[in-house]
Length: 370
Image (cartoon, rainbow, N blue to C red; front, side):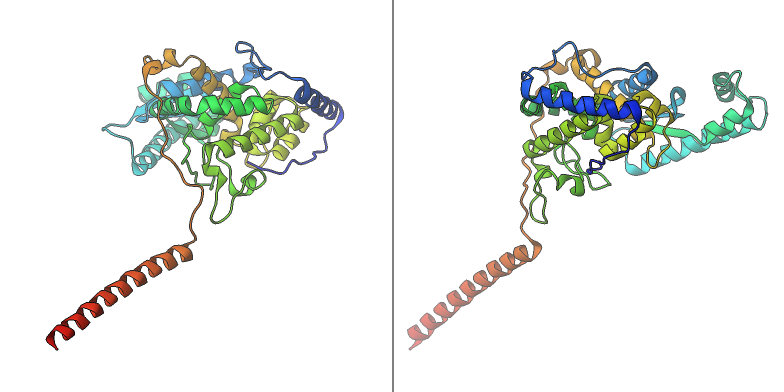
């Protein structure tokens, strides 16, 4: 997430739309009732262009387990070449996941490249793939070979995230309502961390709302010895402020939610090229780091929202399962030198007490002998 709210050079109608949206947001902030959006009519549009992506993520969240590895086209998620089921029990290890990713990309990359060379399909796998490209030139196979992605199923993780959300959602929704946000927006935490307060990403993002240190410092106290990102309440307040700011700047929720992942300035620049049209932006923009994760972020949110609102359909019996209560997490940390000093002081005290006791006994013994 990028923190700087860049004043993009927006042209024509797009600039007018942003100004109008800001004015509307200011009016709303003063006049809106706590329940500004009804439970049935949500302010989150579903553009037809991303509906296949929404459907794909619903399947990833509810249909495919963590032993299912889906090999598909990253820009056309409807084009699924195969769902590989990793044998064995228990959660796949990092080595298992790396192996599945390499195996599938190698196998299907080779198939696509063979078909690109003009060869006739040699087996059922190749015939099935060739049928997906009916009417397309051989060059389409070569392009597809460079566009493979493997997605692991998340059914188990999403199920547990739903149970964690039962604990957090009531207080989070109150915070979002107070900020003038639709309470259903809390579901974004499912995409960020699965409502896991101890979550840490490889990029250094921390907590349920996955703030990086640089972004988080604009909204929370984060030092070497204290981190508000580990406080679900404080981080939720920060997320509400950032999302509110995104919406006020960009004027609609598809862009504002995408900006939570890509940064407000980045989305503002990208959307400006397409007159503020979210669908055009995600289909055509090729800017730096605007990849699969960013393009699918809003679709993932819509998919998560769909599952949350009808969780019993996707996970029968889950309504009767208890919420997962998180273990307490400290936001304060003693400095290493302080910990060492404290430990050294404790050892010193214990050592001194032992010496004192030994000396006392020694004197007593000498006195008795005298």
